[in-house]
Length: 523
Figure 1 (cartoon, helix red, strand yellow):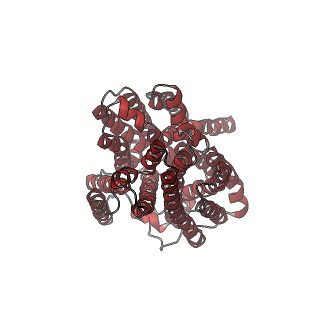
Figure 2 (spheres, helix red, strand yellow):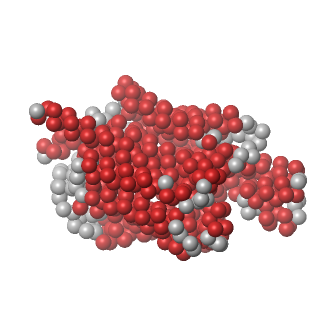
Figure 3 (tube, one colour):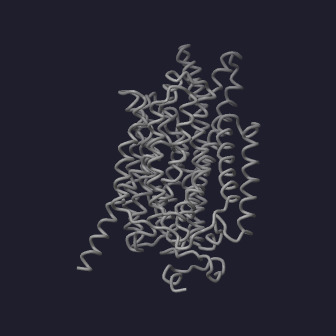
């Protein structure tokens, strides 16, 4: 009877994985789905350009600021409770977005949505190391991590389909049934878990971590719009760096820190954090550039360009499945190194794109890149999560996700600045009339629209070639990140299994020395 009960509980836990995957998928979708709805929202809500910027920024700033504190709340009060509350908040935010009637209401709703999303992802992933055994955890982590990744390219596809056929509010209302299913499944199937030691609140750590991450994210958002020398960009980046530094210095001296930086003494967590940042940078490079290329060079509409991201999604799914087999046969290090190598090859191929490149060319390197991401990201995420004790699972996971988000913002900002620099530089030397140049320089979207309105094939050719040159340069930067990740993987990554980080009160291990979960418990 005892064996039957244990087996039943083990099977029941697996039913929680699809629910958690759906929840993080909804968050991933919401991260990119808004990009295809901005034009419609500008018309229906009478939104200005500044309003549209805040539609995007309000969500990302709150998401970044609240992630680490939400991890602390889960560790302190229970990850299941916080996850349920976050799902409720995410659902309410989705409803408020759908029925907003003014820009102010929509921005407020996006803030609520951001608070909910900030807790959903770390609580979903942070529960896995506690709930699943060492044998089962990698599969659970791979499934939930893959769902997180898939939401990013799926956003333009789902959003484009809805906007082509239905009212724009359904872009957000589709979250509601997902949230309801997730809440029911979490209540019924996910056991409660919390830190065995009640951690004292760290208000200074909460304010400085949230403020620093929000300022950095704002700075990167402004870089995409104004360049690296813009006042807002510089203020955000410098201010964010100063506040984050103050956070680190304070946390290293306080007796009960929000984030215990001894986490980074584990090779698994350190390597997982660094490599997660690099793969997120490269992935956001693909997400940022390819839809623009397909729309403005290939001539596809929003839905058509989104559907042509399906090879990326298929590659991610395939790579995730293969990674589970490859880790057992070749080890963690070899799997991750192969993933980054494939990602580098894909980005290198993508960096040779031309205006005349067909969709088959794009789909080829997207499949290769997707497989690389699927091999690397779930594996490095599991390597990092495996090191987390029950006491640090929520905050550690939140820190990992926050680093990934800032890396994605940095990747998008760097690519935007590279594309704009090349694009505008070539336009400046083209001898265009000042009035036309001023409009065309705003973006490749504006440039293509002007060229087609004027029926000027020479201007269209100039605009498209200028954009592709900038895009290729950006993909070279992403390729360089993937190339650098290979030796980092070989040097830092554990060959087979990461180990548990040093908990509070345990003797400090020398840097680079791993301590297994079994050893940790025995102490």
